[in-house]
Amino acid sequence: MTEFHREVFEQTLAIKAGSTCSYGDIARKMGQSPAVIRAVGAALGINPWPLLIPCHRVVASDGKMTGFSGSGGIKTKLRLLALEGAQLFAE
Image: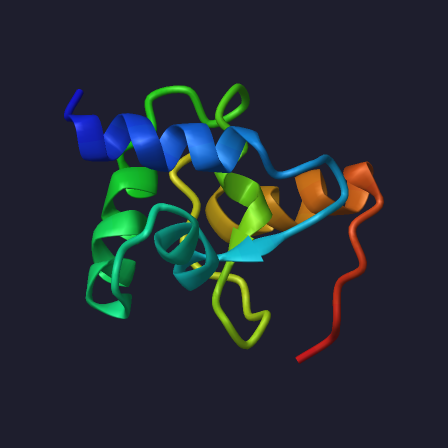
């Protein structure tokens, strides 16, 4: 794992259950420019531990659900967020 991936995963671990943040929020917390938002998404897309590193808590800046590397994709992401009590908005 690269240092970048490790830092993305550490930032993702800091997101509390029932909360969400955006890929851009993670980039900013890492001190990175918005140019690395896609790289943050790519790092989370190869997350080998999707239930341990809670990448389901990371959403698009507009709140929309985006990819999830765990089994079941976005449907599973939504279920996990609902189980945690996250406030989700209908599209």
